[in-house]
Amino acid sequence: MIIPIRCWSCGKPIAHLWEDYKMRRDKGDEKKKILDDLGLDRYCCRQQMMGHVDLIDAASEFKKF
Image (cartoon, rainbow, N blue to C red; front, side, top):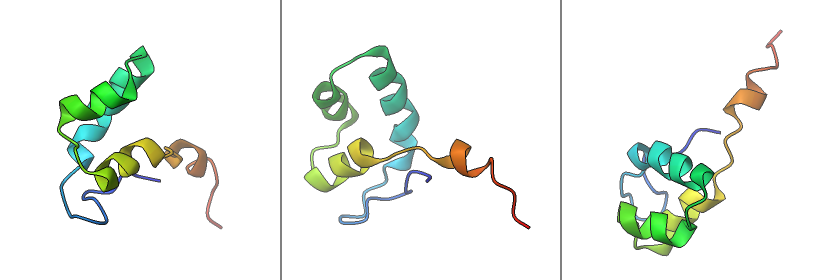
């Protein structure tokens, strides 16, 4: 739901890169170029960014009883 602070495999901090990645992806930039520019060289870190689905807005609609 929320981007992890660190990559689950290698432990590299990645959360601070999420907003920049999301903004550039929404503008239509190529994903490979974005990830290269952000310095994400490892497959595990790239997977965290590309595979993340932001569900926080959908989950916040439901109330806990």
